[in-house]
Image 1 (cartoon, helix red, strand yellow):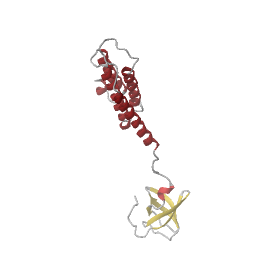
Image 2 (cartoon, one colour):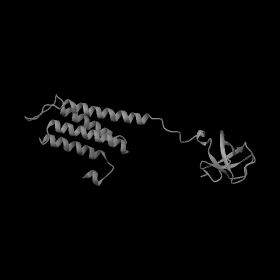
Image 3 (cartoon, one colour):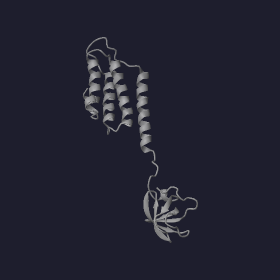
Image 4 (cartoon, helix red, strand yellow):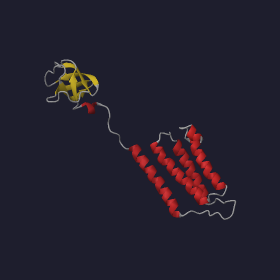
Length: 188
């Protein structure tokens, strides 16, 4: 309930779920396999949620804790204090959980290392269409890619309001040419 009434804290909720599973195991409601697998599935859910939610690593830390506790419960040398509890787990379940965890971290690593597209810089301006804010004869000011730039025209004079196309970037100036047939396009 605490997590529902105080959303965003995350860590108390994670500790609460782990504590509830451990309590059910301690009271004998869940056997060793059930508690261990429940903790490992919870860890997997936390790893997936870390991708979707900005939790700054809290979900991953909780997932690692749940995974470690689940593995400690499932595998020997854990000895239950009461008889009749089966303490082994099917190897297929272990392979499945370890495989899913490896796939998750592989996808996360690949996503993190993927090259991002260039969103700024001179290369984005080349070929852009803009509007002359002043007469460009051969120098003036043009509005290109949402900004006002000092421009130099190499292809002739451009009247105020005329369209220009960026040929190249020269330091803080743009070298432009008149854009034929582009009047009214792309000048945001």
